[in-house]
Length: 309
Ligand SMILES: *Cc1c(COP(=O)(O)O)cnc(C)c1O
Figure 1 (cartoon, rainbow, N blue to C red):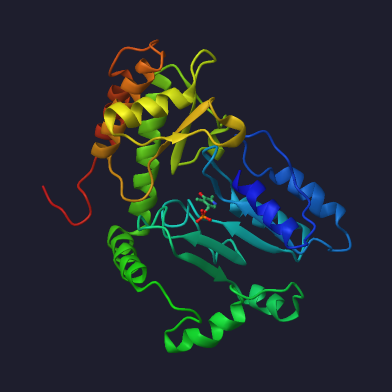
Figure 2: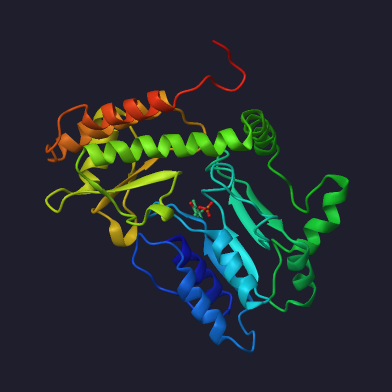
C-alpha cells in the first residue's frame, strides 16, 4: 500500500513511474528490477524507489541486494528508500548500501508523536537536485541546506517534537545498534512462533522478507479479521492493526517496533488469543501462542544493556 501511495504521489507530480506489481506479501523483486533496469539502456530511469518495510503486509525488502543490482549493471539511477517503519528498528545502512534518499517519520520506530518527517540525502542526490526540473517548495533541499548550518530550519519547527526526538535518539544510542536490531528480531521471532502455534500463517511467505517490525497474520476464511481487531480494542483495550486496502478482513497486524519489549508483547499476544476466540477462531489451545513466545523469549533472554544480575 505504501508503494502505491508513493506511485500516486509521483503521478500527481507529473512523473512517469514504471511500477513493478507483485502479490501483496512479497518484497521488492530484485530480479524483475534487474530486468527493468537492464532494458533501460538510455538510462531514462532516474530513481529506483523501494519501501524497505511494508507496514501493510509485514514485508522487509532487501535494499542491499537492490543496491547490488544497480552496481552490477552500472546503472546511475538514484536509490530512494521509504524507511518510515524500519529506520530506528531494523537494519538500515545508508552509507554501505549507498542509499541516495531515505525518509522516515517520528511516529514509528522513534516512538514519539506524529509530526516530524526526516529526510537524509546523499551527495549524489544533492548533486541531482541542482539540475532537477521538478517544481518544489516545502521540502526543497536548498532551503534546508541554507538554514541548517545555523542549527535552524526554514519553517517554524515543532520544538516539543525535536526535544522528544533528542530523547528518543539518546535511547537508541544507549541500547546500541546491534542490540536494537537483535531485540526486534527476538520480538518478531517470538511472535512468529506464536502464529505457528495458533495454526495460522503469515501473509509474507518468504522468510528472507519477513518483517521484524510487525507481523501480519492471515485468518481462516470463515473469520473476519476486523472482528479480531474490534474485540481486541473493545474488550481488552488492545490496539492491533486492521488489514489495509486489498487485505482488509483477511489479515490483522501485530506491531512490535520501537518502545516494545518481551513482557509487553506477551500481553498483546494473550489479548490476540482472546480476541481471536471471540471472533470465532478457536482451533488452538488457549495459551498456545503465548507459550511458544515465552519459550522463545526465555531461551534468548539476556541481561539488559546497562543492567546486572
Ligand atoms: C506509516 C508509513 C508511511 C506514512 O507515513 P505518514 O507520516 O502517514 O505519511 C509511509 N510509509 C511507510 C512504510 C509507513 O509505515
